[in-house]
Length: 361
Image (cartoon, rainbow, N blue to C red; front, top):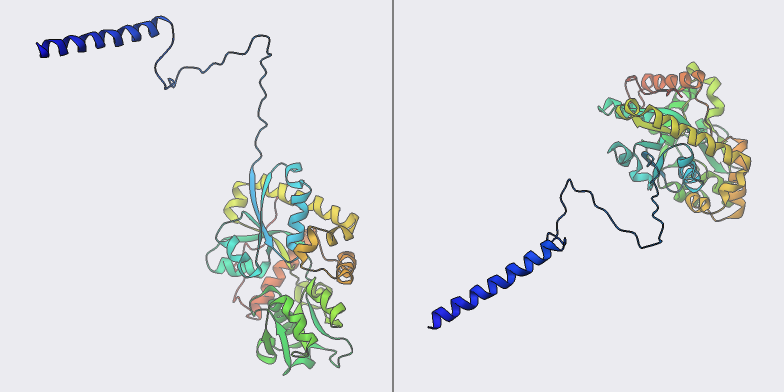
């Protein structure tokens, strides 16, 4: 009797569940919580409410761009970012500002598509190691200087042989460029003849001020600060001023755009867009060089002394600091620079070829 009563109750419960399901189906309400892949999803507007659809704008292609924090390449990149010059030229920039010690590797490990802080010798070295990297547009003229204290007795690089000279790395672009030029013009290898003391670019200024070294190798804005703070003077340089004295009028920029060959081959339009963006940023700077002494640029320069910042603004046109001249003549001079480095056995033994490229636009 107990079993029969239990079975009866179960049958009644099942009948009730079936009735609910049939009622739901007959009312047009689906109990399925997953939508069919082929079934369109529709929504019903409130009465009297207009139904509007807004098309999403086409997404711009993304280009990853890198530069140094604490220098002029960072300023160049920040001008593009702050003014929306990337989007104006048809791409969406992702901007990376790196410590100088890590910036080169950041690019070589392909964390950025285009580096704003490379140079021709760096690209040549990369190619000898199997990394097909090229420079394809310039950013900064070579504004390196050998800086001495104001009124010092040194008048020529030769007179620094045997004394303490500050630099920030034997393989840095600055020390490399002086090694090439002094070898070509004066016939000696500074890596062998100078007593080199290594420190970071900002710290070199204090070494010169405290008379721990007699001269330093440095670039704007650090040698700009040395001129004001020490006070000091530029004994030799900027290096682009001696181009006519070097074989083949050899010359290299302090910084240029660099990219892997396969990226350039696959994205010529994007490479041209990045070049166009720099052209626009370059014009923006030249319209009023004091713009780069204001925030957020002064933070990237790492300077807060108003006299130093005023000097940097003056040097924009005086040296000049920036450039976008990639004429055939300039490209030939950069190629001659690589040949000269190889001839003097400075970091490379031969020109690997393919370092200097141009992009049609």
